Length: 167
Image 1 (cartoon, rainbow, N blue to C red):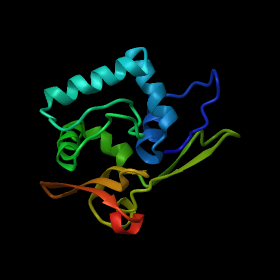
Image 2: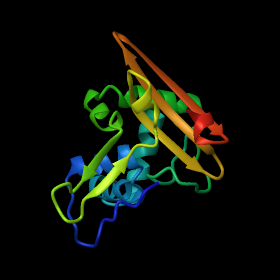
Image 3: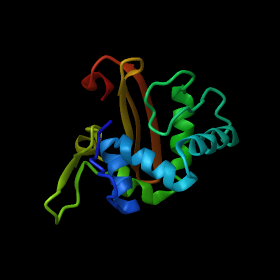
């Protein structure tokens, strides 16, 4: 993930945080939002795991809000698809996940360009999210969603060797 360069004491809006998380995989923004929502990363992870149980995600356990590797932190493609289906109930989310590039602090001297690693957004009509990932353990991963007319599809890829293979 990307470091969005949150400096001590710096304030960002929720909209800016969501841009950083959805477009650029901003791990620092994910942690800051978790702390803001639940008081601490640990309390937020408890909420994540509670929600996973409520959604019937039987092969998912969270240890952090970023998705970075950690002992006993795991999920499956099937569970990721179910999470995505739930997320997409909040239609405004695609205003963040469906953006290929944007800026943070655009009208300041700290302008920061965000580029989405989900290249399908730019090159495949109808794709509006959701998230890519990479770790040495999981390799290149993608949870994609696309909408055409009244039909929505969700596709999940884990373990691709390269970003091109993932796409």
